[in-house]
Image (cartoon, rainbow, N blue to C red; front, side, top):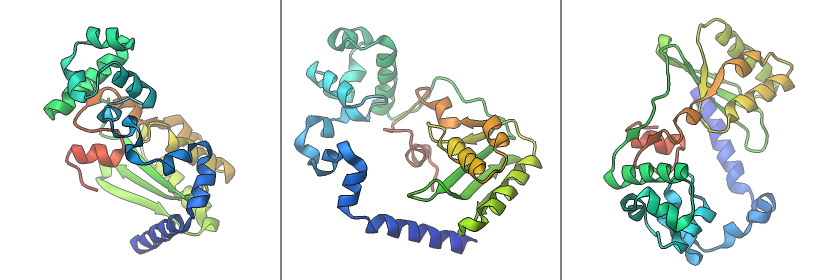
Amino acid sequence: TRKDFEEQKKEAFEIWRQRSEYQWKVDFGEWTALIDRPKNSDNLEISELRNLILCGPARARTLLESGIETIEAINQLSENEIAQLTGFKAGLINIWKKHAFAIVNNRFTIERKPKLKDNHLYYDIETGLLNPKVWLIGVYYPPEEKFIHFFEKNPKRHPEMLENFLQFLEERDFPQMLSYSGTNFDKRTLAAYLEELKLNSFAVLKNDSDLLNQIRCKVFGPFYNYKLKHFAAKLGYEF
């Protein structure tokens, strides 16, 4: 029920809150310095260039050292000028130019639309913070125009929940299951948990496609990452 879901979510965030800073540093290992470092201690931390798609610390540093300090500069310079100053390849510069144009002009540009059908099945999973146990699967199936939730708080009853989910898939006709992560997280995690519980993972492995991989570097707009909540908000959707 919705009430059970809200209680589970509250418990999860409480576990997160109670973790000590020391424990997080143990988990982060070599990245611990990022926790302690002040935000303004490095130009890379405050550089707006980091907002460009595919622009990590090393690339941002190269741009800064080449005298390119803003997204506006990326938008104004030609691809050849940026290539001569930085040595970056044309493909990467082309992506930055398109993204910079979209940000500066506050508009969306679409290089290629994802090929979506009316009967694709959309899904998203939730797992424990410290383990890969899937306790919630949210599904949207357009032909039925409704959202379905497969939820179970008790791990001992997860097999029953997942069997109901698999039966739901078997009873419907759809060309693909679409998730959104950019890393096939939902597919990998769900398939692994099904196999752990000795349930059939073939349906998930066969039909899943990561929607983010279809739109990354093909849809540009005044957004700074493709995280679903941020990306959807820029398109006018509310969570």
